[in-house]
Length: 259
Image 1 (cartoon, one colour):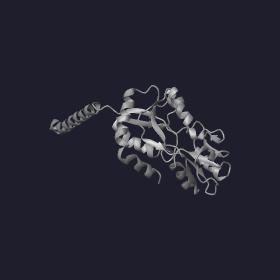
Image 2: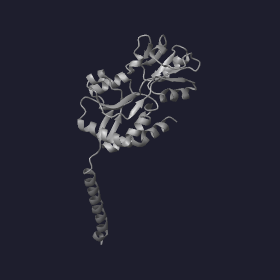
Image 3: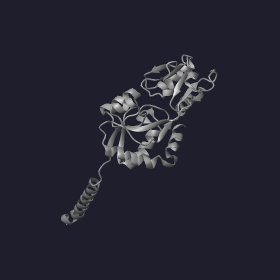
Image 4: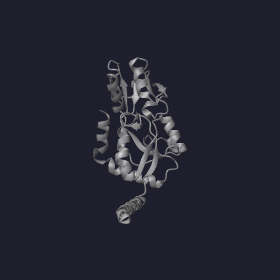
């Protein structure tokens, strides 16, 4: 009798072990996604600093849309300055960044840029509503004015006129710092690579702005890879991006992040 009572328990134990072994075998056949260390600079509402790491439209879009199609998992580093991000890519500290302007200097440093462009910025100058400047038609419109920007941030040729005084700062929260200087009257305007960023910060400061678009083509932003990134990884990204950026999908993420 004692043996008969123990038999069902033994059977249940054996069955449980067999089920666990089968589940383990199934899991072993599915390779975990590759981890891609990714770096970003802060440009709200595309990328913002959060308590648990970067957040914003690009982070959500790449985690939910791009990563599954690439078969990877992005491990995001905390946002850094553009200069630090460049250095991190060149040294291989990070393997990838979702958006970066392609420049000859960055290419010469070995940074590899994806071929297709899926994100474009339209640069503008933010001034206070009462400023005498009503429109920017040529670099001469900005002669003698002091324009805030960020160190190591790429500027279009339009802004390389020596008669435009650039006030460069090197802090991560450069947008807030420059808008504070603008509000205090210490600078005439702030250069922004896109209109979404100044509107995002101005709304949170209760600050009214006048945005003056620059009469130049939009700035193309590429995904960028460290020099040691494999061609296969770049190709996986380009295939995934071609599918996921279609039909305005990213714009929906952008609109949600801007709220």
